[in-house]
Length: 566
Image (cartoon, rainbow, N blue to C red; front, side, top):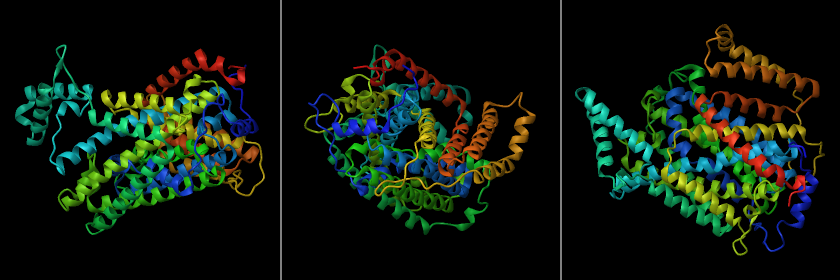
């Protein structure tokens, strides 16, 4: 009855062979090959990040943000290799949730499953809201269609904008620029023109809701249709990105690359959350394990391929953007790709607008595919009600879980602000990465087998301590300052000191037990990225985790199959 009871790999494989459910449900279609999986990975990764968050990262880091893409790619690469080994050993749906169940036990698996809901379902709300913005820009600038403002924004944003505009116009109207004046007048006009219900203005984000419904329908009717749609969208958006890189190269002024890191390495690191958010999604491939023709061979390859392709595209885009415009120009710019071509080549801006809509649609699709399969896996283990594992007899998809995902994301996209969710999603993802990397260290030894991926063993007993000493040297000023002002430091520096202590313990353990270098580095690098995320996001993350644990102890703990639940 322990909350740390574990599933055995041999039992998981046996269940997969015998089939799930009561015999009436059909299994999932095994139609995905390495090309399809690679395209799904690219579809998930190349989305809102490259079209929006890269602007803020470029402002803080300058051209040096390209180094951050490399660092983040290496960090994700360590995790990808660990995911690949798990995918090869445990070729079933569930991703990090199932892998944690094998390595750490049930309650940790539940926590990571709950965190993945944060990454996929709630993160998709942000993507849907971004999609709505890109779609509206496309309608206005290309087709000259103007939708009513009250059906393009959530209530909180509209009311906050109205209150701020009213206050500024009353108190500071004489000092406002023409741009600010127009913006505030627009906010007031949108508020006053909104329809009323019970005396209150009505606001909702209709385009975001509609695209969620369409993508959910596509995920519901079959993996084959979803695969084909994702492939077409990936081909289109990669073609556009390569075109932008080539076209942008003609406008590059190499003087803008000097200084390369205008705000130092610390400035580069300020973009960690934004850049990491641009990489979220490659792990979603592992949720489709049961729909792969040869998961033990193809899943590992596709993860590495998609990560490499996306990294090359990101680095090239970062260098082109910061070469066309000085890094200081990207302050507050939400659409950097369109921004740099706005005056130089407006026709390219229109192509980018179309590509942004396509790119964010593909991200929505992959996450809407991934989330139901995690719920399906949790339901099979008894941690969620049986209805979540129901497979549609015709479409062979997890039907109920797909509909629930669509309802949650659709309702959130209709009424919620996107604000905190970017960082929340990053926390959930990094937790998953840490547990997957740490879980590999706990797997029983397995000899190399033909057709199965295995992380190459590199003894970390010398390399890890050397890197720890190098890290201390590079961050010596931050360490000295944090220790000297420990009583008055903000939480960020306290977390930095905690990280150093945990990293020291891991380093000592690596020396003692001769742990493999790759998974240890995966744990250490993801932990560092975690400490750079703002405090308010951590607060809401712990609230989310507390809610998850309440649900687990009220239902999952008692109904778990390992506890004899039915």
